[in-house]
Image (tube, rainbow, N blue to C red; front, side, top):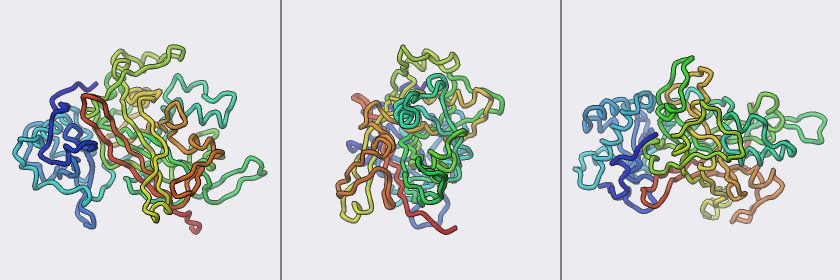
Length: 436
């Protein structure tokens, strides 16, 4: 687990004025990593750090660092963060500390020439993602959706014993701003004798956290729970879009396939676990539930293995944009409700010897809370499409319509600690492409 150090001091201010503004996602205590280039340019992608409303170009600032921080910064000279992610955590911490000291109020603003405004930047995926695994870590989501398909037995017998997941498709993951066509596929109505082919009619979002792997492990080598977080570079916000009607027809017996692999969207910035250290919580399991097997349990996990990260969902339809209406919030949830922790997901993923690679992405699965207002997907919020809701424009929705934009935001806040924001992840649904 990451311990508090000088970078977490809530009294720290930056000479980048916007980083000190109330409600900023990117104060000096955060310093998340991403990949960017100037809008409208064809220049090479470069690694950067968010500070206030600015981005520090790490490649341009190489000469400002010494020792382990210089070694770490050199690994950020390329167009992805993979080389930096592959380093030992001490290098991640060394660069973060050097950045904190260089950007603090009172330090010489030697890095100022290497800043660009975020509004002038375009983002790419922060890492080359070789593999994507999506977990199912919210018991509230699993129970609510399970009731729709299996009213008498919402949770499968293994749910409380093992972190459930399926292997997804990394090729269709894009950074915030993704625009994608409504997927086509097979669906079967309950009263139909045979399936039909056509555009998905029940397009949904899934409010998730993404877990970016840092150092990998060799094939056949397990990552024990106590070491799992040292293999996690950081977290992002993730939307794993879902075609519910396609999913309902295809998911048995092997799980999701075409209903999930057409689009997934991540936020541009990766927030390190070190930045989130002040926002840790005790990880708990109800006493009446089965307790984790020994390889998924420890005193450290119980003491501070969870994270307090508030997550919000907003929608803006095409009509709302035309009318100048701002995005409308649909729900608010929190990662603290997760049934399985970050470290448990990583440890279980490798318990059979599976090798993870730097830049691999794990999804937490839809993060829903215990109430309807904390639903992380429309299938929950509209009770399977039976209870429409009304937008400020007067439109109604059960599932997404063409032109809808979904925005997720995430942040950790508590008294006595700096606010750590994740920025936002946005994606827009376009009409189906009916021709090949």
